[in-house]
Length: 524
Image 1 (tube, rainbow, N blue to C red):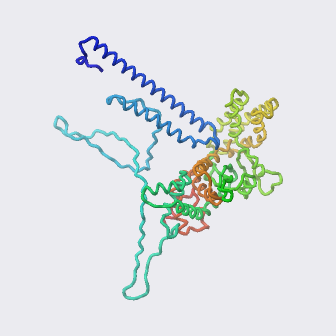
Image 2: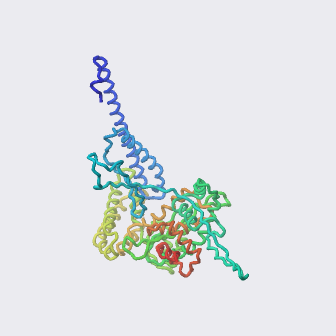
Image 3: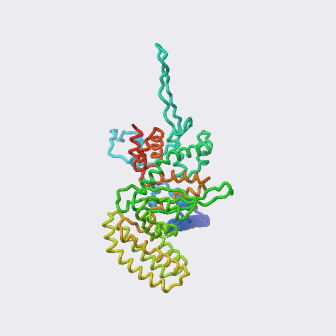
């Protein structure tokens, strides 16, 4: 603002000052407009990335591959907002709160309190000030991860009066005999590799920054030995899951190096999952990954040996082997996924006006709205709600399906989408007969996403055995996540229990959902 005392008496000089002030004001307005335009453009880009990442679920366009781009965009927006705050006058930096997720500070985190007192507690009148309240703020602080050395001393004792020998406590058991790491260190490497998707060579670089020289091959040896020791726990996990009568199954690619051809071959991780939480079932959630060299239904049949009940799957034809008429050793019913059926119709709507496909998407959406209201209720209540509300919608949709299939070209995209729904119709409507069945296969698809991300970072497994180790450890980590258990704490406790001679006859005590039991065992 111009001070009247500083204004010149000369008219021309005064005009020049006014023109300059107006130019500065116009430039400031233009800067604000450009900044608003940048913010709007970045916000549209963020929305577009989120739509691409989350609008359509598929492994080819999983959300994780957009994380880096989203981080850069959101960082750019934060810079602009910081510029706004810095440009504001010091006394007027009270801005409208932005819609941003600042996170929350959990109650379990340790608090380090700092009390900031005024410079003086004497009042201007000469009296003493007394506390009438306080303002409290909390900020998230971090103590950087630090490696340490555990030194174990075992004194030797001998008698001065005789020569009966030397007494010394036995050496504690170790996962890596005569090796450097504690079980907690090995668990940290496993979680970093299979939960945080850090390949071993990157972990070696990170550890090296603290002056610890560890080769990647050394870390690989630790991982392999841990996988061997954890294999019985994995076997107990998959056996426990298969004792259920309602499971999910899905498969995803697992590129594996083929040493003979110096190329990669395509293996598969088969995920077998249990999640009874939507209907308040008593069994804990769990997932077991099994590596197989192919995608044929013979592998699903082998993995499911001993299982009978309802299996929720997508429309992959390999699962038909499980319900073949000549198969007499198991009773399996296939429930199919409405999300896959909906996805095929959504793809058609993206390419232009498609009223029939849009109508189909709307009909399926009505089923999902009902399911959202029934989620978390017991099976009988869910079944009653479906029979009352969803059965008429399914009957109407069957009429709609027959009507349009007779009028749409079979080879057209819409014709193929309708044919897909008709082909799996009996399995799609199976959820109307059992309150435990979900409307889609999303429960198991969510467990596969970390496998896909790890695959992207690692590119391929070194060999079939490496893929099997990958499946073993990933199964335990993902099951921990499903049960809201810290994988690092669980693996540390479990490896410690195994090293200390935990009995194979009680291996079920080491399953992730029994973590607190295993913890008490290790403390004894």
